Image (tube, rainbow, N blue to C red; front, side):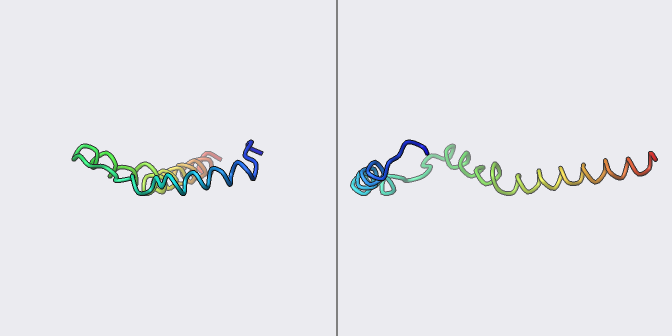
Length: 70
């Protein structure tokens, strides 16, 4: 386990309910910050799909090359 007992979870849950961090979250405010945060999807979304596609293409090309070498 990770060291979190049910009591600790309950206490943390209550603290977070009182703290309400989601109300303080405003996102990027400056143009520079907005430009930086707009790249988050590139880091995790579309680029991951593209990277996986490229890996698959490389795998297929290597397999095809092996066929021609036989």
